[in-house]
Amino acid sequence: MSTQRQPAARARTERQRARRRRILDSTTRLAAAGGFDAVQMREVAESAQVALGTLYRYFPSKIHLLVAVLHDQLELLHATLRERPLPERDPAARVAHTLRRAFRAHQREPRLTAAMMRALLFADGSAREEVTAVSRLTSALLLDAAGLEPPWSEEELSAVRVIQHTWQSTLVFWLAGTVSLENAHADVETACRLLAGGRRPPARPQEEPIE
Image (cartoon, rainbow, N blue to C red; front, top):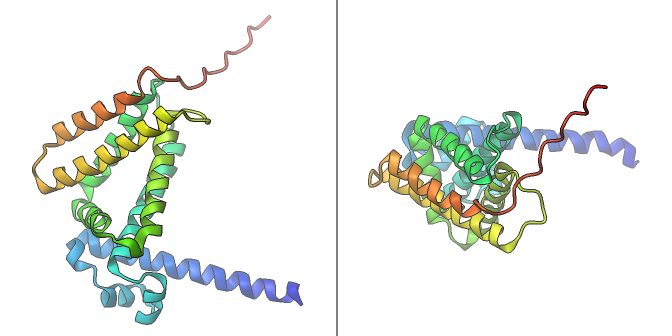
């Protein structure tokens, strides 16, 4: 009996994943076009072709929606990082390069970025799980970017947290027009230097000499 039920269960899971993907894509389009205020639950449901009640079961509010979109965007950045390895050997330079790459993406979609950051700032205890997931993914992304293998020291983990906080705050100030892009990059690079002087990534294996 269990084997007969597996295909149906798998199909339901696939449908749920596809439904969630449509919801996130619709939210992304609305936010990119009109920012935070353009993301309305009814419009998202209509665009994603799901019932409004179904949308609320997946995401209780637009804050939950936009924080989930932020997580989705970070996953894309993480995937890009793995597909296009960084040339730098220094951990600080590698992280700074990654965050400059992220800033370029934010420049292309400033309304979407502003909506996601506003949601992150407005999130309350009801979205703790989603915010925690974003924080963990950001830390994983930065550690991968640095090229540092575990176990990480407390100093390295603290440095990553400071870099994360600096990146997010400078992004908010840049979006508000109170910090120039040049100064935002400089501030992030200053924070990234907290990783300088620590462990280096493993040396590349040298080729065996040909006899």
